[in-house]
Length: 259
Image (cartoon, rainbow, N blue to C red; front, side, top):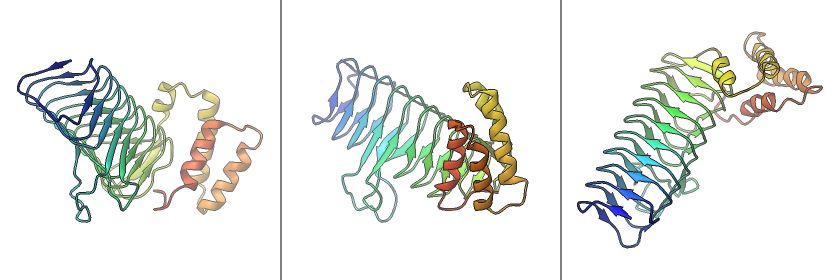
């Protein structure tokens, strides 16, 4: 195991032999780090935290820190991170609170650019990109294969569906359905993320079907339940799994979708 002489590792932490710890890093109590993860320099990781395989943490990132939520009283809440994530300079990630499920979860294959932030009790899926200074408040749920533009902010308890896209300097305070593209402050819907769908190998037939569903939800002046019923009718003969993702992302909304 490569641990620089200037770094401090708590004796209760569990590090795989292949982990590399650069200079001036601090690994706190109850931290577990799996194979081939690298802390380049000046990284702080506090626990209880579980860090999966092949993650890279750049300088001045602070991971698993106590939440500043005023309800937090020092409880042993958790952070769980999957595999193959990149945390660039100054990224901050907080553990959960007992008022929720007591855990913040981050999946795999995510890129967190400089100074992006994941607050307490958030759930972040796989394959997402947080551009510089993108920040999500507590209890936010981020799906899979989503891009958050630079300087984006997401209000607490919001949900962003799979393959959605958020332009730079966007403020979000409602749920965003799957595949939908939003931008501006406050956020407004500007179309579908067809580029993202194509890049993720969603078929042209599925994209065509999602476009029809989008028109029903956003262009026909229907109530949400009316639009969803028509979209379900549209999918009866197709049983398209990509369209099912769109439908579910609307149905699970609690704050209401952005329209």
